[in-house]
Length: 221
Length: 221
View 1 (cartoon, chains in turn yellow, brown):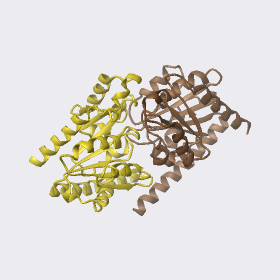
View 2 (tube, each protein chain N blue to C red):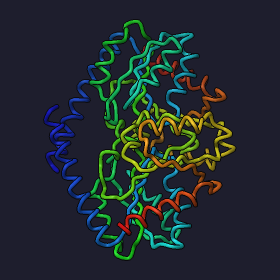
View 3 (tube, chains in turn yellow, red):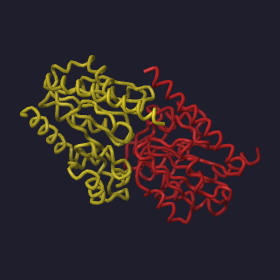
């Protein structure tokens, strides 16, 4: 077992090195990079669709889509006319920094101000892999129960914001917003929390405004 | 990279050996073992709560609960008076056969006819690990979209049944039951499909009846 652990550490160390290369490249090009992670079906691609519609009005944007199989999500982004590259992991449960680096070769990031990376739908494994992003966002939805931050703490601890999606379904599901907030903040007291619905559009402008603010702060630094 | 692959193969080979040991042990004791996997928040524990209420009337039952952190699910099962053991994986993204074997030491399986194993909420990694179970069930819910079988095919391919949960939310979500069935059967044409709601109880008796039927077939063989 010790050998496995050492090998895993070596893989993560190599990942961190490439993530730092990615981040230096992003900084040199002036691209602000935001990653999205969640369970399958929490609404990562829907959040992107709704947010890109607003963000592209003031920024040049691009997307890297990660999926275990299929290019279904990339086609949804492509339909918006936003530059997108699909990474199919072929069974691997997370994106890593090398996969992102490989994808960048197919995107003109030099012309971009904002790049989103949508991870594979998985609340566990992606937490361990730095991709070189500037902001990490985790989604959770009102249909999943309030306790996901307690049960999958690493992802919520390593994110700067939680998007609580599908608030339009609140009348139909046993979900307590206050309890969800309390549980999330117990795991990560500095987590920004947004409540959104990709069906009604609620909360999307506030979320986009925060992204733009974070981008400005980073550019100013 | 070749080395990683070899090591992964070795881990999976060792897992299969222990899974076979588990299965032989289950068969010798006459315990029928059913595993549940899904995204976080699809309703695995709720399905267990509803199903155990029916199944325990005719069978002696037990549960192994797998979670990355917390014993919240085990406490929900314990509240029903059903014997349960919690496995906390401490960050690991799946149960493996050794973890199950370790848990069995704390359960009187000799007195059981039916044992459920609830995996960590993850549609990717658990697919690769045989636990020694007789039946594998994957849950998907109407709030997650129809395309999960296409995007996470391994899990749906290796399961005998799919439980399509939260059908009480159908009026409020853009979800097409017929399309969901088509997509699932495209990935695994022999998949049994159950439509359930743990809120209204719809479909639970049919699901339980099928479990009992599968148990009888195995005992008769």
